Length: 136
Image (cartoon, rainbow, N blue to C red; front, side, top):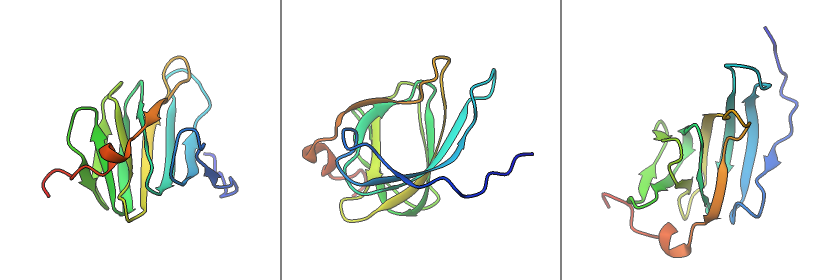
């Protein structure tokens, strides 16, 4: 058993990836060893997400407030507390806060055999971000 006390400082997401504020707390980032490559983060986001992919996929679990997500070519979806979203390996997508709200979610993913967990793309445009969500 290993207990890690809450001593890791909250970090901000890089400005070249996010146009809005992003604050990340590491939950787990296991050392690379055969068969064990999980990562988990708590992320509190303001509006301004980037397009990105995950080589092994990603699950997010919304903890509080309201967010949006979209896969490339699909509709914008509204997500809220208790919602789980799985993004397939290599699926181009974004997820972030709603235009007038923050969103906090858990991000759970694995690194691939090269140690990569995400590939960042271009910023979501204002037009993409402000599209009318599905079902509204």
